[in-house]
Length: 225
Ligand code: B12
Image (cartoon, rainbow, N blue to C red; front, side):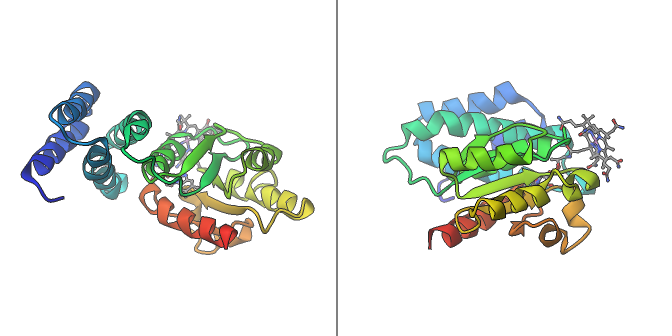
């Protein structure tokens, strides 16, 4: 962030997120574009710092509410989808991720925020939705030639159960796909047991959506090297 216009726009954008005022947030983005800010600058200097600021403020510390958190992710997803085609040079796609919540788990908000962060960092995403069967994770990942399967679980039994990441790992083994696909998991249960991600057969986990892109980038690199 260098110029004062960008700083001012970011401040106004953050205020609209704190007020959960979506029309205002979208208007600020549009005004920035109308005033000559490039789509690249809007994404990297306004949208991403805005989302990181909201996600960095932990809900548990009562600094940011769930609706503020969610709105930041929702706007990021909408704006990034709209602006990427307008980038001067098509950005290099950094990898392809197939994501969903584990079978039996209907908690979709965390996944939505992860998608916003990954899209904003130029990962291509196939969103399988909520309560995804383990076979479907693998079938879709193979169909779209993804490098990473991302599984969100908010409940202990869906994180550790037989139809979750554990089964996805077994299927990768059975089909000889372990060299081609990595598994990342996330969600509250993994916060309380350092090693749980390994126990369920994942290659990695990330505590927050803001941390996910760096971990996914490492996994993509592993698959490609
Ligand atoms: C909102 C909510 C719901 C909503 C979900 C709405 C929706 N569309 O998602 C509704 C009302 C539907 C719901 C239902 C239920 N819920 Co509920 N729910 C919650 C609540 C309050 C918040 C979850 C949430 O959205 N958090 C906010 C998001 C942003 O945070 P997050 O999910 O952790 O995601 C972040 C990170 O974890 C990470 N992340 C998340 N996923 C991934 C994935 C990857 C790959 C990566 C890298 C990172 C990552 O990034 C995100 C952003 O930083 C929690 C309690 C809590 N405080 O967590 C209970 C909670 C998860 N629910 C619980 C339960 C028991 C249920 C029900 C069974 C209740 C019932 N008796 O019907 C049902 C289950 C339905 C089902 N089968 O899934 C329990 C789970 C207990 C357990 N330990 O297993 C909790 C913990 C409440 C409690 N204390 O008892 N719930």
